[in-house]
Image 1 (cartoon, rainbow, N blue to C red):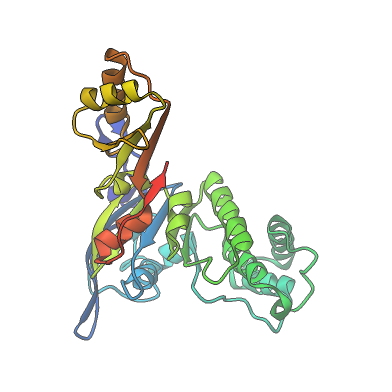
Image 2: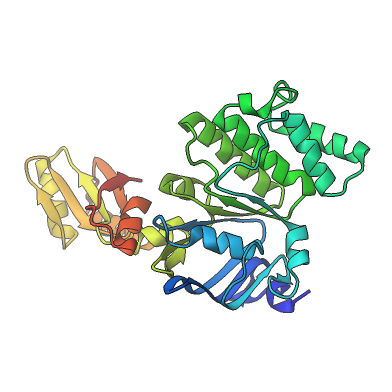
Amino acid sequence: MPSSVMSTPRRGGVPQPPAAVSTIGLRKSYGNKTVLDGIDLRIPAGSVFALLGPNGAGKTTAVKILSTLIAADGGQAQVAGHDIATSPDGVRAAIGVTGQFSAVDGLITGEENMLLMADLHHLSKREGRRVAAQLLERFDLVEAARKPASTYSGGMKRRLDIAMTLVGDPRIIFLDEPTTGLDPRSRHTMWQIIRQLVTGGVTVFLTTQYLQEADQLADRIAVLNDGKIAAQGTAEELKRLIPGGHVRLRFCDPASYHCAALAVGEVTRDDEALTLQIPSDGSQHELRFLLNRLHSAGIEADELTVHTPDLDDVFFALTGGTDQPKETVR
């Protein structure tokens, strides 16, 4: 097993988890169109990674390459310790893939879909039935198991799709826009399923158009634009890249308000509402500094709120969107 993937490099003296997926300089073109232009990623095992980007940015292409469905034009990638070019069978044995479009066969029942998948994984009939029954129960599909899958709702089909993906007990799952078209309740159910998978030690590589989804689920996020990774990090790290964050202080006492305005330095005042707006990235360090200044001056605000850009703002800023940033209270 390649040591470059499974070793645990140290950052600041602390061992990092082994990488479930890593890429260096990954490239893919279709004719004159460069879809992936040197992609570098390192996704720790047992985490959720979200790849964001506009339509046509290359998200699905990245998933297809990493799941060995298509070949890259250049670069290197390893998945579950296997090189995608030299050991594709090893990659396929370790992963599961749920694509944008359901793999469910609507002409047969949910149970038959599961048993068909068990056959494809060369499970014995007894083991296949055991695994199918276990997963149908886990995904709340027992009552519908013997009904044609064509009668299932969108959310039920998506749950069945993921249940089929889990038949082979994969260590890494690629979910390509798994909640597109689902209603909010079904989407939240899918989020719960993804969280449970990660709790069980599975690594999830997620592509999504729903920024709230990435914010809710992902340990790390990368924004793909024009074939390149525009930025990557935790949701909070990405939000700090965008200007506009601030702390807002509100006062009931005009005297305290005026004293605070003098104490905190750079500030935007609203004398009518008795509020002060101080530029801030929302970090603990900056908040502590601000509170210490207020405490030293003997001032106590009646209300303090931290406002940071959200992932929508990050997305528009990094992908060339023209939408104006909006504030979200955190």
